[in-house]
Length: 289
Length: 289
Image 1 (cartoon, chains in turn orange, yellow):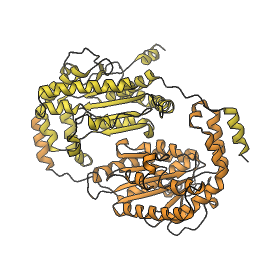
Image 2: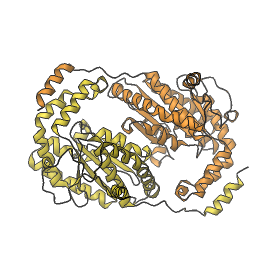
Image 3: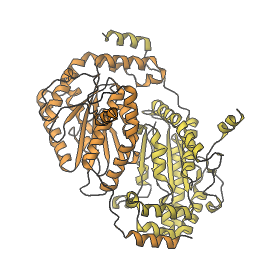
Image 4: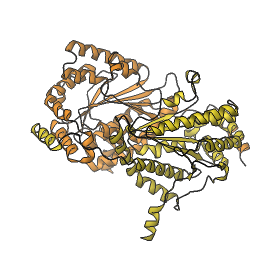
């Protein structure tokens, strides 16, 4: 009994940064399992056990808020180095809810048309509709991460973009969107092993690109860019969570918990019937043989 | 052993109409389980057992065909009367594959902007990209079904639309899309019971609309419209399947089988590596501590 109640209290939520964070991502352990004392098997069990809750909360969100002018929504933003497990989050966490209630956008390199606009132009179009869970697989943050690392934007421009991102996210939260921002945090060693696996397994070759190896030379610059971006954009209304991701099972558990918390914060209720139920039952009965 | 091999031969594929069908949907039994001799529990077990195959085939399709100019794709079109179980197909069949490989579009009543264009205008925009499984929850067929029933289009216009649909689908299949067209076929009695359940359960009230009861008065006209539409548009390259749907578990099993067959017909293979794998392994090892 004591063990069970202890388990019930566990909240695997990663490292919550909050609005005044001034730390360094390299100080956070990619193999940690903050808020969770269990092992891999316990984690997998918990993930499966809570999939139903997540599905029901999503359906309530949809039922209560879609087609509402001031309806609520959730936006999950997932950032992370190559191989950090973004795809696994989509399959094993986001994939547990009704696909009709989710709108996933993968932001790859911008097209020529997109490049002619401000960097947020293509992002704005994918802000979630009321009642929906929007998911960004990479996001506006690429423009302050890879752009800083490769010098495609100078420091002043990166600062301008961070300010623009904060204003954009404030707009969204003011309009009723709960934003969950996740950095999937892996170690350089773990990334090396995952890339090696892609080279060793013929069914993973298609995921490998030689550029992934080149980028490893910039690892420290990426961590520095992440640290700066997280400091500049972890705000009260849209804080960052660094989710240790060397253990895939933990990262999935934490993102599931963050989504559950976001939905429970909205606490959507099944809408009241806007018709007289007994009257409709009588009408329906008349049509039945 | 004999039992097992018999099971392996079962192919729950609904009623395949083929290109010269001139039957009547009302002659097809909504409670039948064509191609499957098992019960509900067997059906659920089979659905779960094959989810992994479907997921792997989808990933192969994506790996082999996305970003290819002449890449293959699958388009699943799901039609059916209200409560026929379209949402359940999305959650329990389509939901088994990586959400990043699926593009679901629910076609509700057209907007004013959409109405200013030809009926196929809004449909064309959602034809699946190479490597993707596109799914239409309702479709271009609404324009020859509800439009015929309510007289929003006269017989000549409905014929013109059927011809346009056939030409459009020919275009898609010529370009490498395998089209799977499913009518989820329920009985009027079963629909009545499902609507009653929506009225009895507070968590289902939001799905109920009094118009659903009104539409039941047109049941025979809908069946006639379906029969005419299926006759006119079940072509060699894009034939219809009528899937009995009074038993939800059977309908899901049949749609899963049809998707498996479509993907196996494409038979996507993992792409060959376009780099020298050993060379890349050596480069990667140099970056590892």
